[in-house]
View 1 (cartoon, rainbow, N blue to C red):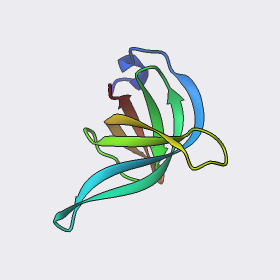
View 2 (view 1 turned 90 degrees about the vertical axis):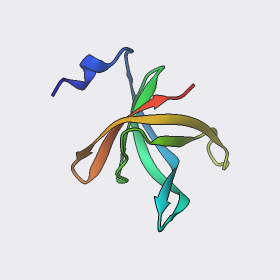
View 3 (view 1 turned 45 degrees about the vertical axis):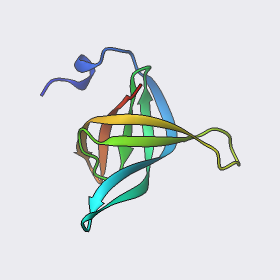
Length: 100
């Protein structure tokens, strides 16, 4: 397997940010929205790395909800595509590409 850094086209900065995310899934024959939590681990102009306990899959569109200010319930929505996701211990590590 190629080193993940070899596939990156932009440099990444370390990130330590808790983030909520939302995605739609087909469950019990119907479409449902779910909200989960993750943790941002790195960030670039084109995307970010995240860990989560939820098993993301490549190709899924995920809406990240970044807190704008502390103490207020205001979030900045950012749409991303899951480029890859792999198990990492009890969690999953995922690479997300920002959608324009």
